[in-house]
Length: 193
Image 1 (cartoon, rainbow, N blue to C red):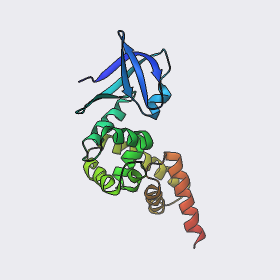
Image 2 (tube, rainbow, N blue to C red):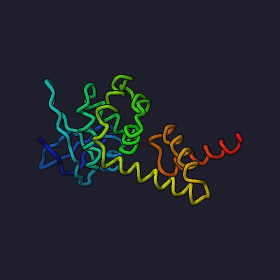
Image 3 (cartoon, rainbow, N blue to C red):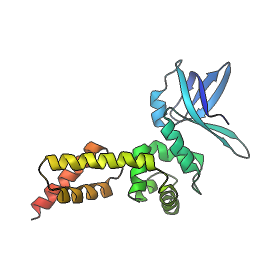
Image 4 (cartoon, helix red, strand yellow):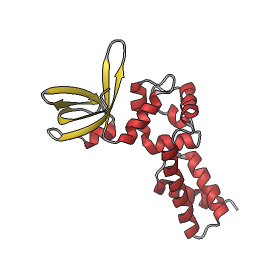
């Protein structure tokens, strides 16, 4: 197994790159985040997953090891191949996937091209409980937003209801997006009284 590759970027496109290592060019499939970090003629270290198929051997590379781990985890889900796993990681990112799994929101996965309703539900079922490290990130974000709402004068229970509603609407949202959405929820609730 090739677990990482270090070499010079000799060709790069949004979907793949060629990394030269001691005179041999390795084609590595990449996502948007990795693409944005690669520059021609620069040295790079990519954490890789080597995928064996009947008719091919492919490398999928990531500058972020957490993305690789998530890619490998998605690959264990029945019906999710390497291209689908890369598309999911590419489109949703670590936080988006973690949030969707934590809130059991399969619609987030259905938004990815090639992922149907059954596969989306299966991803949720398969990854639940396996993302403990990343779920702590979601918990930290939620706690920060909750604290910010309380600092603005909202009672904890009122702020928590608004935050839960915001998380259901946009589970992959950043901290600032969650805060804005929670505030708009609170404003709508206040206006309806």
